[in-house]
Length: 635
Image (cartoon, rainbow, N blue to C red):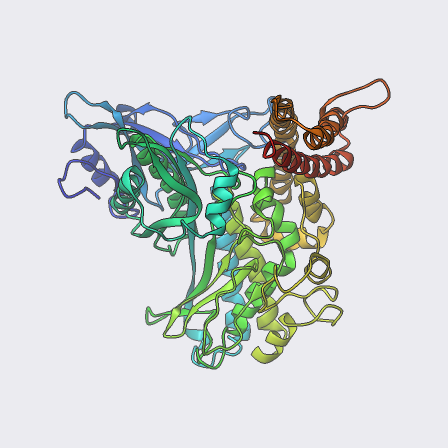
């Protein structure tokens, strides 16, 4: 819709205009000079082209029939799908979601005096007469789950929900939302890790007042999200960061802060994922206009808080009367925390999560965030709260129940493992398919709500009909403080430390993968393509970024020569130097850890490479600590 001064068109709402209406609207906005079909590959990358608007006016239909734009396999991540000898990929526009206008505020249209706009039309990617992109995977998954769930409800009813007649259910609505965390900083300025760590421990940033340029940019970002129809709910400071430092003239010299912005949930998962992508574009551009860099990396600074993108999901039933009923809410919100179908949904997600995890945390950066001590999950476990009459928020678990006793429509689950670079399309696809498998069990098993609750609350070693005997799946305790690492591993499984370890959850659980690919919504060859692409990325990033960066760090940890040096300093630096040589220096009788890791990657020995990566991370952490201890004793 247009903003208050009626100059710019920010988005075209889905279904509000037909062809003639869209073209007439665009004629009123000559500053929109380009159109772009936005396809999402399996890595979550969005395509972008600059097609003159005249082409859109001349052949509107071709943009929705795959004839307007083609690309090839080298332009998008469709590993082993769109190959070089069979590369053509057609792009089909999607009229079922909002179309956004992306404005370039640095390119002012001389005729109108307004920034030049590009109409971004979300699209599907077709290869060999088959849709293979992330958006189509999510669409197929939701269509499949909707059809199957409706059939189950018609055939078996809704157990534990006497207030809803199954014959009245005419549709299934999927609700979803994401929360966007990110770091902002002044370009080319640094803050020490120690300053950040101390500020985090002192809780000096979380939900504090924003100041200066950060405040301006945050307010502008929230306002602009509203203009794009996202109905921003709030923007606030997160746990990470330090207070801004001013120069001698009172200007901000150093800014490094972590922020979060949330917006309203959607009843269309495709729109949720499209909104999240557009929100990242808006946030990055607004802060850049204010002279600030933005990073959406999951763990931009090791040792301090990372950035998550908590993903909420729910399932509603639409009745003949038009009323919506939350299938996760019980009949009495004060007596029960969750309905039978809600319990089934979280059972399905947790049962399949080892196979899902590679699609959620696909990079080394993502796994670096999932460490104890940073409010990020490390265990496959849920929480419902200790008393249904008092909703509880356990922030240490993987996926928890969110509820408002006075608002049954608000009941949902929050998955806390995604990060801003998680592919939201494929993540939501697997969330809803796995949740459906658990809901199917809840509908057909004949168990009461209390019996389902007992099953998900089982102890390790206690047998169950649906869940693994050797796991626990629910706790109301603090996962980090109330259990040792050994206890966590025994109860909830061992968390993967590398991308290679993570994909073993996919490779080692073919029966779970079979369930996740049901209905051919997220077909196995597309899953295999996704896995192949993240392994390739893991290898390239490790060899060409992480090892070289660590090598530079090792080279910079040199002796500090001062007159005050003593035997303690010499001893401490000797320990530092031993580690430096072990990590980075080859000799006649021993290859360095960096060399051995590089050779393992080149040879495709991923088991060894994964073990060496873990050792490298541990040794680098030890080296940094030893060098800091050495340096602090030097005047």
